[in-house]
Image (cartoon, rainbow, N blue to C red; front, side, top):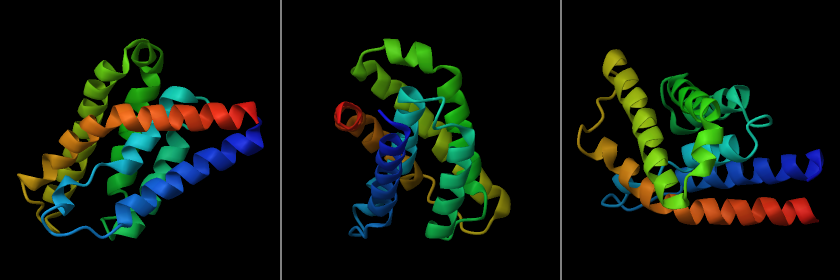
Length: 161
Protein backbone atom coordinates (compact mmCIF):
# COMPACT_ATOMS: atom_id res chain seq x y z
CA UNK A 1 0.00 0.00 0.00
CA UNK A 2 1.48 3.33 -0.96
CA UNK A 3 1.61 5.93 1.74
CA UNK A 4 -0.80 8.13 -0.21
CA UNK A 5 -3.49 5.44 -0.62
CA UNK A 6 -2.90 4.27 2.97
CA UNK A 7 -3.39 7.82 4.23
CA UNK A 8 -6.64 8.25 2.32
CA UNK A 9 -8.04 4.92 3.50
CA UNK A 10 -7.16 5.65 7.12
CA UNK A 11 -8.57 9.19 6.94
CA UNK A 12 -11.76 7.96 5.26
CA UNK A 13 -12.36 5.31 7.93
CA UNK A 14 -11.93 7.87 10.71
CA UNK A 15 -14.26 10.28 8.90
CA UNK A 16 -16.92 7.58 8.60
CA UNK A 17 -16.46 6.68 12.29
CA UNK A 18 -16.91 10.35 13.25
CA UNK A 19 -20.03 10.55 11.07
CA UNK A 20 -21.48 7.41 12.68
CA UNK A 21 -20.78 8.95 16.08
CA UNK A 22 -22.62 12.15 15.12
CA UNK A 23 -25.55 10.32 13.51
CA UNK A 24 -28.75 11.09 15.45
CA UNK A 25 -30.36 8.06 17.04
CA UNK A 26 -33.71 7.68 18.77
CA UNK A 27 -33.52 8.23 22.53
CA UNK A 28 -33.87 4.52 23.30
CA UNK A 29 -30.94 3.62 21.00
CA UNK A 30 -28.55 6.47 21.80
CA UNK A 31 -27.01 4.84 24.91
CA UNK A 32 -26.23 1.73 22.83
CA UNK A 33 -24.16 3.63 20.21
CA UNK A 34 -20.91 1.73 19.65
CA UNK A 35 -17.62 3.52 20.24
CA UNK A 36 -16.97 3.79 16.48
CA UNK A 37 -13.94 6.07 16.68
CA UNK A 38 -12.25 3.99 19.37
CA UNK A 39 -12.85 0.77 17.43
CA UNK A 40 -11.43 2.21 14.20
CA UNK A 41 -8.44 3.53 16.15
CA UNK A 42 -7.87 0.11 17.72
CA UNK A 43 -8.01 -1.55 14.30
CA UNK A 44 -5.42 0.80 12.78
CA UNK A 45 -3.23 0.47 15.90
CA UNK A 46 -3.25 -3.28 15.36
CA UNK A 47 -2.81 -3.18 11.58
CA UNK A 48 -0.37 -0.27 11.19
CA UNK A 49 0.96 0.74 14.62
CA UNK A 50 3.91 2.56 13.07
CA UNK A 51 1.57 4.88 11.11
CA UNK A 52 -1.42 5.35 13.41
CA UNK A 53 -0.02 6.04 16.84
CA UNK A 54 -0.44 8.25 19.86
CA UNK A 55 -0.35 11.55 17.95
CA UNK A 56 -3.18 10.42 15.68
CA UNK A 57 -5.13 9.16 18.71
CA UNK A 58 -4.71 12.49 20.48
CA UNK A 59 -5.70 14.52 17.40
CA UNK A 60 -8.77 12.36 16.72
CA UNK A 61 -9.67 12.60 20.41
CA UNK A 62 -9.52 16.41 20.32
CA UNK A 63 -11.65 16.41 17.18
CA UNK A 64 -14.16 14.14 18.92
CA UNK A 65 -14.18 16.42 21.97
CA UNK A 66 -15.03 19.41 19.79
CA UNK A 67 -17.64 17.48 17.82
CA UNK A 68 -19.40 16.18 20.96
CA UNK A 69 -18.94 19.39 22.98
CA UNK A 70 -17.16 17.29 25.58
CA UNK A 71 -14.62 18.73 28.02
CA UNK A 72 -11.50 19.48 25.99
CA UNK A 73 -9.09 16.61 26.30
CA UNK A 74 -11.54 14.03 27.66
CA UNK A 75 -11.63 11.84 24.54
CA UNK A 76 -8.05 12.80 23.68
CA UNK A 77 -6.90 11.32 27.00
CA UNK A 78 -9.08 8.23 26.68
CA UNK A 79 -8.18 7.48 23.05
CA UNK A 80 -4.46 8.10 23.63
CA UNK A 81 -4.51 5.70 26.59
CA UNK A 82 -6.37 3.05 24.59
CA UNK A 83 -3.96 3.56 21.70
CA UNK A 84 -0.94 3.19 24.00
CA UNK A 85 -2.22 -0.10 25.45
CA UNK A 86 -3.10 -1.41 21.98
CA UNK A 87 0.23 -0.50 20.40
CA UNK A 88 2.21 -1.85 23.36
CA UNK A 89 0.48 -5.22 22.94
CA UNK A 90 -0.33 -5.24 19.21
CA UNK A 91 1.84 -8.24 18.36
CA UNK A 92 0.16 -10.32 21.04
CA UNK A 93 -3.37 -9.12 20.15
CA UNK A 94 -2.90 -9.99 16.47
CA UNK A 95 -2.27 -13.64 17.33
CA UNK A 96 -5.72 -14.08 18.80
CA UNK A 97 -8.70 -15.13 16.69
CA UNK A 98 -11.24 -12.40 16.01
CA UNK A 99 -13.60 -13.70 18.69
CA UNK A 100 -10.96 -13.36 21.38
CA UNK A 101 -9.92 -10.00 19.94
CA UNK A 102 -13.53 -8.87 20.47
CA UNK A 103 -13.17 -9.53 24.19
CA UNK A 104 -9.92 -7.53 24.30
CA UNK A 105 -11.55 -4.72 22.32
CA UNK A 106 -14.42 -4.80 24.81
CA UNK A 107 -11.92 -4.33 27.63
CA UNK A 108 -10.24 -1.46 25.75
CA UNK A 109 -13.62 0.21 25.17
CA UNK A 110 -14.34 -0.32 28.87
CA UNK A 111 -11.09 1.53 29.62
CA UNK A 112 -12.17 4.33 27.26
CA UNK A 113 -15.60 4.59 28.89
CA UNK A 114 -14.08 4.48 32.38
CA UNK A 115 -11.71 7.36 31.60
CA UNK A 116 -14.45 9.52 30.08
CA UNK A 117 -16.70 8.70 33.05
CA UNK A 118 -14.00 9.71 35.54
CA UNK A 119 -13.25 12.97 33.74
CA UNK A 120 -16.94 13.90 33.76
CA UNK A 121 -17.23 12.95 37.43
CA UNK A 122 -14.14 14.97 38.37
CA UNK A 123 -15.29 18.03 36.46
CA UNK A 124 -18.90 17.55 37.61
CA UNK A 125 -20.03 19.22 34.39
CA UNK A 126 -22.55 16.73 33.21
CA UNK A 127 -23.01 13.63 35.27
CA UNK A 128 -23.18 10.64 32.96
CA UNK A 129 -25.89 8.10 33.59
CA UNK A 130 -24.02 5.45 35.58
CA UNK A 131 -25.96 2.64 33.86
CA UNK A 132 -26.27 3.83 30.26
CA UNK A 133 -22.63 4.94 30.08
CA UNK A 134 -21.45 1.33 29.84
CA UNK A 135 -23.71 0.07 27.01
CA UNK A 136 -21.20 0.98 24.24
CA UNK A 137 -18.87 -1.67 25.69
CA UNK A 138 -21.43 -4.36 24.83
CA UNK A 139 -22.29 -3.10 21.35
CA UNK A 140 -18.66 -2.45 20.43
CA UNK A 141 -17.64 -5.93 21.55
CA UNK A 142 -20.41 -7.51 19.48
CA UNK A 143 -19.64 -5.43 16.37
CA UNK A 144 -15.85 -5.87 16.46
CA UNK A 145 -15.65 -9.05 14.33
CA UNK A 146 -17.62 -7.43 11.50
CA UNK A 147 -15.75 -4.14 11.70
CA UNK A 148 -12.43 -6.00 11.77
CA UNK A 149 -13.29 -8.00 8.65
CA UNK A 150 -14.59 -4.91 6.83
CA UNK A 151 -11.52 -2.79 7.60
CA UNK A 152 -9.10 -5.64 6.88
CA UNK A 153 -10.68 -6.19 3.45
CA UNK A 154 -10.65 -2.45 2.76
CA UNK A 155 -6.96 -2.25 3.69
CA UNK A 156 -6.10 -5.25 1.51
CA UNK A 157 -7.99 -3.84 -1.50
CA UNK A 158 -6.26 -0.50 -1.14
CA UNK A 159 -2.95 -2.31 -0.85
CA UNK A 160 -3.49 -4.32 -4.05
CA UNK A 161 -4.54 -1.32 -6.14
